[in-house]
Image (cartoon, rainbow, N blue to C red; front, side):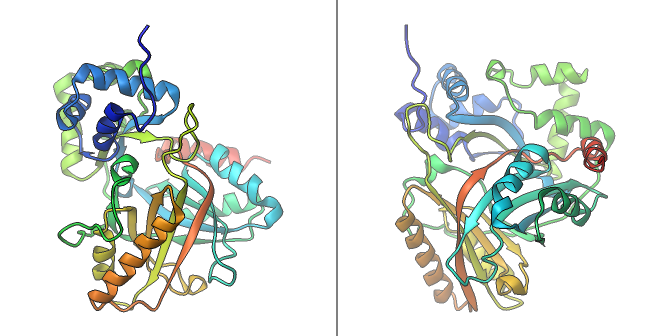
Amino acid sequence: MCIVPVDHDDSINARILEVSEDQISGFFREPFKEISLRSGVDLAIVLTRIQAMLRAGTIRRVRQTLLANRMAEGALVAWKVPGEKLDSAFDFMFQEDPFSGHVVIRSADAGTPGGTYRLWTTLKVPLGESLESHCNILLHRTGAEGFRLMRAKGIFTLGVGHVRRKSIQPGDKASRPAKMLAVSTSPVTPLEWKVLLTLKQEFSPEEICEPAWKRRILQLGLKSEDFFQIAESLESRRFIGRFSTFLEHVKPSLSGKRVTRFNALFHWAVPRGFEEMAGAEVGRHEILTHCYWREAGPEFNNVNIMAVAHGTHKGTLLAHKVSIDQHLRSMSIPVHYTNIFWGGRSEIKPSEISPFIHAKWVEKMQQP
């Protein structure tokens, strides 16, 4: 019996993951075939390896991502929670709120502005709903003392490719500044909603095949060409993100290996008018998985550029931060303040965006 390797650092798996984590941008009619073409690995092997890694938990999910900022209101939320309630608040956000995605307990040096905000989440609510109202429900349910909503004004980097980034050195950056994607929302039709919600469903191991979308198309009762035309129209209007295999990068694999050990949330405060330039220069650094323009307010010393980096060594992440700071100075971009919030306990799940599910959730939370 042939045992299929399932660790992320197996040579063939690494070739697949270097592509499949964050390089399949947009919608593809045959996404696994595209992974095969770009990785140079035979399609049958790609399908077998992704299936095996998904079953083993090396890959935690396979799905088409959506650019939720186009169809939902979103924000990074920092929560001030009493120490004795921190873990229970974390559990509630992760287990009971499908609209909270990333849930992370962070720490910073003593005296750091905003350092009392230990719990950090990403939150999305459907268009027409209130982020503040949603947070107030969570505040009441968790015993949190306060929260700070930080909406994104611009996105410079968004793509989690941990295997690909393992070889990136401090200072490695794109040849050009990152382009800012302005955050804006746009309505969709009821049929488009159905297609979007079908697209974002996670793939089961049995669905790792080509044609990849056959089961979803049958569920909707659409003709294949109609489904593809709707999906491609949504992509052209910037509703579609990337097709991705998401690694379990926090917990160890079955063999005890971790993809990453540390994650750092970098903060910079730049003068008004420099936000887009600073974000573009920060965002071109290859190590970063996320880079945003967000206004954190006076409690965080008016931080307005935030970025996230992951790695296996804390010292290496600090070296990346030093390189980014040096680059900002070389570009004559003034920085009033900078700091790092380190991630500890964390869980990640896709944020729900369905208005129907949100209405049911609010009704449930309002029950005594």
